[in-house]
Length: 332
Image 1 (cartoon, rainbow, N blue to C red):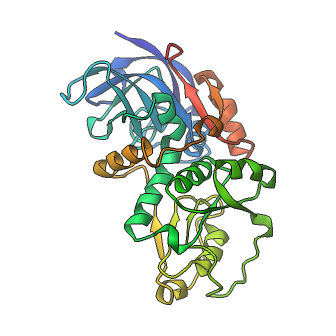
Image 2: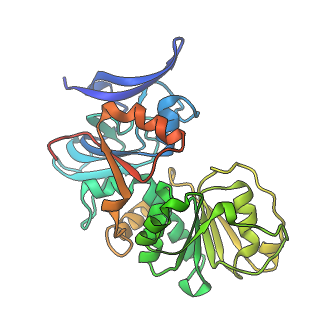
Image 3: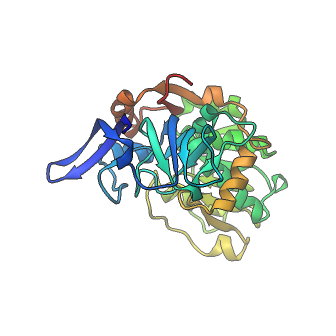
């Protein structure tokens, strides 16, 4: 019997509550691969789940954390051996199965990724779901013939975790990136990450016309709402807008004109359910030609399990900046 600490989320007759609990590894969600967790990270989705402000979990109780990385302790799948370094993002973590906020996690072998050469466990969790999402957008846009020659890529919500990593990843891949953010005091930081231009969203005026002068070759939009509606008329012919967030709302008003006149494409980025072969491809890129160059700057906070509630509160209040790494094994 292995007893360990975990940040566990409950919702029952006594209401929603979350905090550190002791649990037995034998009670973890089923799976072929048991790991000793080294790191996790904090995403907006984690903050919603941990505070009960969003309906993220589909069953209770579960350990929080949609990202996890560590070393294999035991495996019934021959593809994994004791001591192997592995990672997992999304794939039902902290939704339908126990996530990464525990000293141990049991993973489904189908979604367990061997740590690629070129990445450390720590780096993989600084990247986490946020960087994976940005890289998935880049992959899908490239599959739809996006290229640097089409023009700059607009990244909205640029001062958030996905936005920062997108700036780093897209610029590493040869794109000129124009960062759009409401935090003008962070512009110098965003330029250091690779943004060629920074645009204050408060001063970004959209004409409201169905079509306007093309300004961007494509975009990665974390915002939705009026931002997405305003961007579509500004996209060059055959450019792509990848949408991965809804910070500005789940609805948007648009017309068919950018699509039928300029051939623009709107690509949905749903990272949690990404197919295994695509996951493998993306993590190989993230360990090599798309590896962000500024990970040590992008991670602005490193915490333990006990500090999660305070971080969740700050994140939901809009008072966070950069990626928060969760160190679970102090020996790594």
